[in-house]
Image (cartoon, rainbow over all chains, first blue to last red; front, side, top):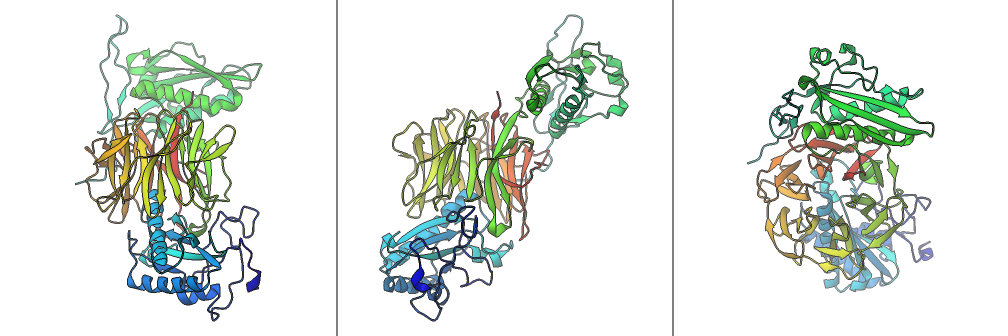
Length: 174
Length: 443
């Protein structure tokens, strides 16, 4: 099934850091009648987490996301370690490109959080580029506070929502 | 230091007015909306007279809308019809002022409704200043289709409100907003439009994509909004009547969002994010290349024009935290105007030009507030877990905003509050609501 990945395939990227069952893949791609419906999920082959060339390995073993401090977009040491491994994987698997999704917690106004999420996504993109990944394989998008992963209103959830997620897609450029 | 004005009340002032007739020195029914304490003015609003057979029901419904509008301002209270001594049986019959004084009605609204053979609805009304023994202003009438009965009731309400307060009305106006449903981590959002009181909701987009922050054009015929339908946020212009729309200010590899019209409707100011940096841009809707208004490494967003089009208020974190700045509409060096505690965002210039409304975030609480355009006289009007995104009523005296409650089961809805901080009210909508934008008075 790994070979059946279509060009337009979107990948479910959910199972890494969170116990939450909600896939971190959001609206826009699937129309109301499309697979999974609004905000739904297009399912594709992830491969096995033990296969270093698989998307599952990238998402779970390396980790597809990094977290940020409140109102910050700087990458701490742990984030840099994860991103270094992401860069190595992307350099070894050039048939993939990635969309980096920046997110914010709900403690902020809508427009500011959109801009902040973009800052976070861009910080990840710049780091990956610094590690040798071609910039034309990396696109960014910010969801601001529109798509929280965890929905409680305290720091335990907020900290998981302040994230940038590297979402792989098949295809060399975006 | 700032205090939250929970219930600063407007002052009631009975002003001496120029004598209108030699026979009577009138003391007109009048409210000045400003800080102070008000006891709501008692109004008698007898059921409007049905002047044609079959008009009884619409007359009764229009009366209820007028009463609800006026009472909803917090400036008036309605006297129970059970207390009435006089009966209004004809629109032109003389008013027995003593009967209305006896039940302490300061104002009396008399209305009459007829439905013509062609199905046209006609409503007329007179407002009486009971303690002056005289009408307040001329009688007025409005005609329209029977389907537009609510709008006609809003027009009557606006006229009564204006005559007593001296302010423009706002009842006959609409609000665009984002209708929200579903859980917090899978919210579905649709652009919707409704009457300002929450009636007549219509959806302008489906729920396939995330949509944000619709903004009315100055004449109320178009909206700007942000949609993720291409996968990345970008700005769309929609004609409300036809539903036709087009993407504007799109730029590959960037996000565009937070649009607002210029006061003449010809230009759009917005934010564009590129390479981790967000600045303000201006696009002429007639065409041409977008013009960059700010060029700073900080976040510049949420711009709003002054009503004369000469200045722009926006938020920036160039100082290290979100604060409010005013600059010339052509760009240039901005002046910071917010200096209170916490962060400030989403500034909106009042249509009257006298205040800027904003969101303040401080110590885990959110507030809606207003300040003079130079930053003075700041006052916070509300406080909650998450209040955000003020918009002004056409008369610049009432603000609508969104309030979201905390936690996994948190719900978001629309509220309104006076600029004095009084009369906080929930707007009843079928779904959750956010990102309101209050349109102009309808023609």
